[in-house]
Length: 604
Image (tube, rainbow, N blue to C red; front, top):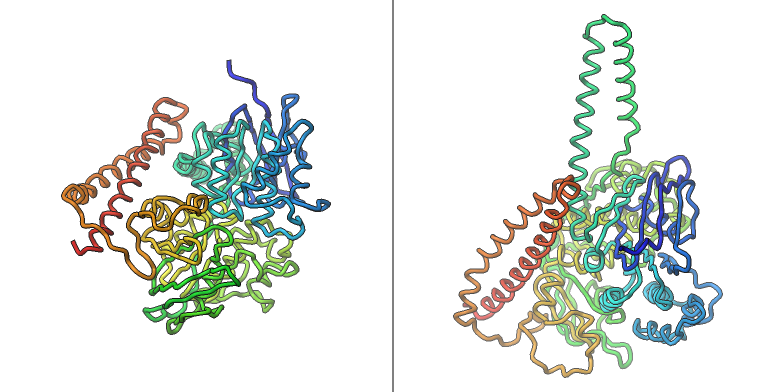
């Protein structure tokens, strides 16, 4: 017999102002649950999480928690006031009987000593301390709101491993697709105030959501046709039998009311960049550049060329010097040795993850217009600021809202709107994905795909890197940076390990054998392809095509919104087969890329 739920929310509703934020939400958390809570920015995910944690009261609904159940909640912006050290903050969240050595273990695992002053922590350090407080008591339920924000790749991968091994039930809110896919077994979708649940992890959610929207659109067209038919009857129909006609007219009014009161999906983000005239073919050329602060070498002898249209990703652990490297490449900071040459007709736009350009006292309109009027120039055309804000999901009422009251996701969307309104042919984006919802990430990805200029992207989002960049520049420690072809997954396949593995094994010999790579300064000697590898290279395209066809068929099956209710076994089999096929496709593509690189290096 299944264990009873630890926590249940039933028919929860909450209204802010005049618009209902949550109308009919349900949430059930059982022992060992692994659930992701997904939805648009502003849909009420964090509010529902706070209600589940007992920190907010709904207007209506029931919250029931089994007696003796312990809950720990990770907020997006923890309050450190009143604590002298990071360790004191973590220990304050522990119950009597908890082993306090675990607090030190978690802090040390996250790269902290515990003696840090909470008032002076950076965003990433603050997130690590808050995570340690949530994890330390080993609670029955963990409610984590954007746990990967401001974390570097080693910390994200460490957190994945820690959560996979915990006995606690998990409810996760995150924009990191790979993180959600690795940890979730069920998905709760909060959409227009209502929750819908699927007993599958995040990897199947987007196909299910799109199928639901398609079915909803078909129903909307049916309702429109029915209204049109009734209106046609009203104008031209027979007037006999007055009572029947009155009833039919009443039905028409009911249909119109149903159409008016129907809550549609929140508007889609519409992104377009203001591109400047094309830059020269050569955008950046670094020759043997080095930079050090005292004994610490940030960059050592790096040579790199960035050509027009390149998409370069920069990854590394916090403190590796990513921001310093970007400043060197863009001419903001002079190197200690070597030279950096910038191309001609270069117009650069920097999106700063610290959001330093946003003044808390400014209104949303003032951020976009600089306080001059109500128009903004985008792509050479003047647009009213409210119309432009609607493209980024802001309401007209928010145009005069101070920046200080915006959520993290809203601030990031505003910063992206500001950056894209300024003509540029070189975009430098430093952690642009923080606090964005998945749909906005999709639109940002599409915009960058269509962008004709050059992109330098600093990110810890592995999935976003895979989707956007053409090469990845990775910190190898001691000022050494190496460029790998492809996205993050391609880099791991070529390198043989991720950023976390490298950071965890710094004591190993630098001279150990490594797989073929493309270095920014030089190319190592590679072996020639053997007969078996040549045959594999010839047959891989056909295998990739076959897998792509199978994936398309499986997605078509899963696109049926009624499949799960009608035939759960078939749905689960198709979902598992889809994951297996996608994994096989990724492995085949990685292998093909590695063999092509070997062949190209030797001219075979």
